[in-house]
Picture 1 (cartoon, rainbow, N blue to C red):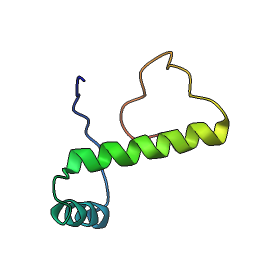
Picture 2: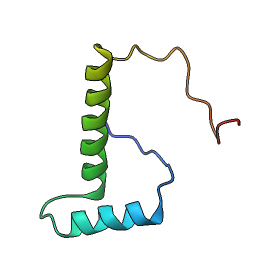
Picture 3: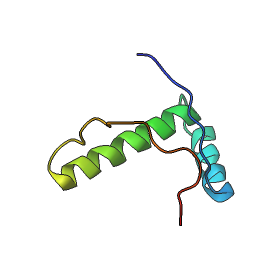
Length: 67
């Protein structure tokens, strides 16, 4: 499986909680925790909508969302 690097911002409190969870879970990595959490959340979103999300027609906009 090919891996890719992604950068995003999280609150300091969430990062600290995640690091504590990884520290106290043998064999767990921060990347593994984030991947598992994202997979579970996306699967729940797909289940709620009744189907998988279609492929994007373009890349996501970069930067902060417009207000």
